Length: 274
Image (cartoon, rainbow, N blue to C red):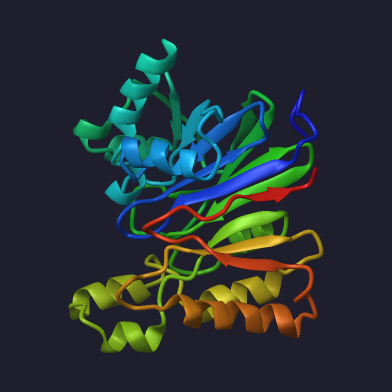
């Protein structure tokens, strides 16, 4: 449990999720972090304001991996934070991710951590676990305050025991439902790109994500936002049907709230606990 956490609950706000940019805000009112910064700094600020988080603190950025749709704004966001606060904004990532960052996006203050690490940032405890993706050293991040935990699990080609264990501890999450396999195979992507997406180091299909959810659904899980949906190879209603079937079959339809983490606008924040 984080030291000094308040009792206002943990807020998770998916600001944008998809191949055109990813960023999720998680905070408890005292401390806040961004998981990824693949949207522009202007968009991050605008979308936070749109969901009532204009004054919410950003105390760190947790980077999942080096792809531009997850880290493109890092250098500019760091400069913007320095201008606003006079302080450096720490960016936490694995050493592999740091080594693979394009020079133009490297922020002022980078802290490297090993996959599997956990540590405190203000009133929050944060941690990361390794995921299988075609990058240097990718991770999924979780954030905890007063025993409530939220996480972002996207950009992975297959479920793993480590990912299953993490999902079994979360009260709210963004979970990848990237593609419908039939849409992917019949869609406009080149064959090499289709193979990459469906590989064990690519992205989760609706079927894989639903299976992962079915294996790990537990009484504490209250909010699941379906994220990183492909605009070419998926449809929100198709992904939601796959997730809803799992929840209904588990008899948890009145307990687990399903939603979307859209690409082009922020999702309404979800709050865990109070």
